[in-house]
Length: 258
Image 1 (cartoon, rainbow, N blue to C red):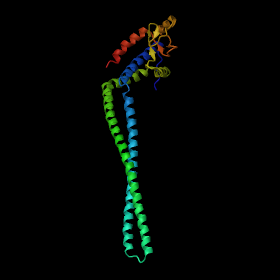
Image 2 (tube, one colour; image 1 turned 180 degrees about the horizontal axis):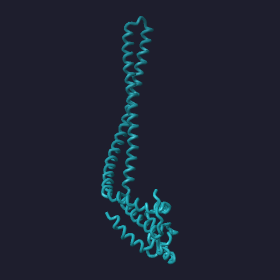
Image 3 (cartoon, rainbow, N blue to C red; image 1 turned 90 degrees about the horizontal axis):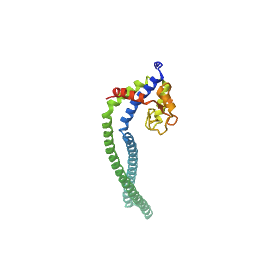
Image 4 (tube, helix red, strand yellow; image 1 turned 45 degrees about the vertical axis):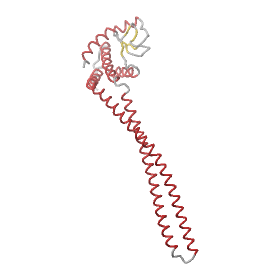
């Protein structure tokens, strides 16, 4: 990174306030999107979760159908054996062989009854799962339609301000490059800890903007002298005087005008 030429405290304060004006405008642009980006992300996550559930139901239904296919094979095999045993009964030589074949036939008939019972059970499970799956797919479809609407809404908002946002990001980087790294790091830290994104503020009726704590007259004089960087002990923000605020605001309005 290129070495930054040493500048006066006043120039640092002006550079910081200029950067604050740019970043505040960027905040305004992004705030117009409100909760939309989060809503879109939440919808995408919810849809992904429901689709995974749907895949699980599809797998479970396939498994039940496989069980039905297996039981149908058992039934067909049992019917084939019954026909075979009945045919053999016609050619037996004694009652013992006839009874033995009869028992085999009874066993295969029980296999058929048991398999048919299991097929009904599997069918009932499939019916329940398909009903749940249909409700799930309907919900997924509704959410996808809602997501499409929200994405279009978000894309519309982004497209309206995209060029301005890109321009301001470039300007923010440009103005940030004029500030030494340690001071810039402090600026970003204060901004991150501020609910309003303000790190550099002027005074309003003797108090820092957004604060109710009045600055003592002596300190107000020190702020106006611009000889050192003064941090508000209550809000933690960097303080600048009204005259500097007015001068830099007028100057920056021309710079960031879009």
